[in-house]
Length: 338
Image (cartoon, rainbow, N blue to C red; front, side, top):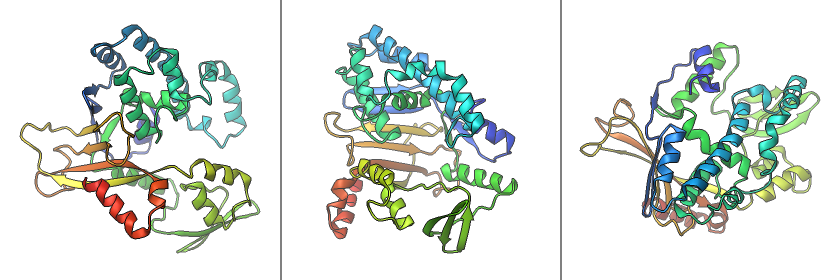
């Protein structure tokens, strides 16, 4: 949204990206619950309160607490200096902000469902279904597993200026890397890293294009893959071992990339749909999907007037890993094609 981090980057560095602003941001369809999520928080809360049987006072109290937590954490996301790794200025900034963190303290280490229990909403199905779906997409787990402060903050993404990137999220990635290049950075694609080792003052990465040294390295990997890259056996680093154990039964995704003719009366703007077939079953293996549909102005990604559809669902990795490789492919195909 205006004034937020990506907006500042786009303006400051002249990043060439086109955005479509959505209303609703997401449309949820789950059992007998249909809920369009608008970009305005107040409108959304009133829509929730207008649902049949809604405990309106408790819903408003829940969202008031959610807003206090979200305001605290989104201030961190908007200022990279407040994110790790911390320098002296960053630590000092956090010390000065300590009173603002008080709303978080009661919920650190506790799941989002604890907040629902506090407000007497844990068993109210429409809100619980919406939160489970939201957490599955953003935090990658259910509301019963998502840590409350982070989940309460991610709930706010609808109301913080969420947009659809025209030509796909790759257009934003290209714009960012072009800006980095103009600022003097070197950007390499398709340069697979085969090994990583610590050296005095930093790291040495063995890549397909030759060795690279760096003061810092950011790994977009699960802990098990980080251990393999570093050549560290289990037991060599207790911190990595703990992290690996924590995600041993995590999630993967099954995806579909489709193109289709828009039906008569389809809106010109992009659409984001979140669908749950059976809210009483786990939100995985096709029972819960997120679908992003391109807009009419997003030309060149599909033949003629067709729109692109990107569809995702979660896959439990323990189930997938337990299957032989050939059966893994069949398992994913069954999920993709029902």
